[in-house]
Image 1 (cartoon, rainbow, N blue to C red):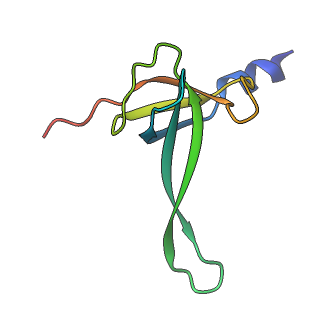
Image 2: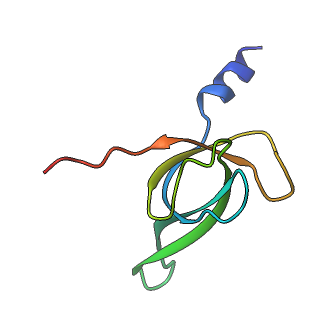
Length: 90
């Protein structure tokens, strides 16, 4: 029983930029991360796109959002938008 509670605490969260909002109740979010080449040890950027559930169609292209993993909503949608990430004030 406690294992399930621990798994719920470790839900995956990602931060990314909305690159498409043309679908109904869905946005496409692009996330970027760095990987290290196993032989040459050089770091390189890897981008991945996720379809995320946006029930009110509130997020537009260019918004920086936080998405969390959820139960499958459709064939490709397994993520849900939690909210906008507040940009740091300079």
